[in-house]
Image 1 (cartoon, one colour):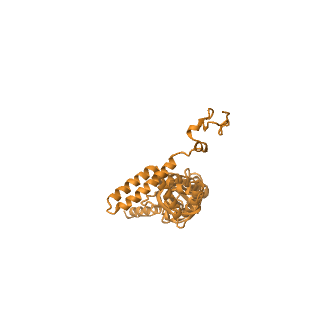
Image 2: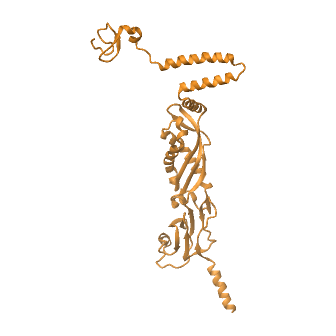
Image 3: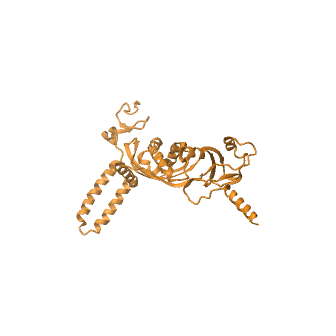
Length: 330
């Protein structure tokens, strides 16, 4: 009986030194890479590898990237580990435990990443010349090429979160933002009305800048662009002119409002007198704008001594032999 119990304990001890199940359940929202902890144990040939959706498992042998496993459930064997088999020089049918590192890469989108210009970026505008802009917004990215990301960014750490790459990604995006704004050819006066168009253009222009890290820029949103004070004043002036619209109606409205205010003001007699003079001047200016200017011929010749050219219809002196406008003989 004691011998049987000893055999069971020995079997449990031996099997505890080998890994039969390999998986990663990510409890966080910002972990990008997790190295499966083997605790110095070896992986059993025939072990079960589970790769969940939005994950990729990469097997590394002595620092060299070997096989990559997409989402699914795998029974590890020489058939589905061809690169590992070649690196280890295993013969067909190898069935012994082996040592390897397994990295799980999170391939889902990492959303709501903040970006902003710590210092103003320069932009050349056709109307205002060189101006300084400040901007901020959000972006989203994902790991698009796991092997490139492991080589270029991750290395051999135990795990990595978005904080490990967000600084580099943000600086790369902001450094290219000024070029993207300039290449979009959107005037400074129209930037505030074209955030969506500018965001899409910036997305296309900035995405290639992080591809070398194995990352893909999924979205880039501009939430605000702060313009210099003189440009903002120009925008306010342009907006005010648009709000005024019809100058005649605006003048009439202002006149009616002033009359109402003066009537409610005990000392409004002088204001009413000034208002009358102002209204008279406004009428004169309005008439000058609305009435077309008479031609030199029309203003110089009385109506009783004129006639109309039968060719072009211009009013000319009755005694004229030729029309001064079209030259037709009268």
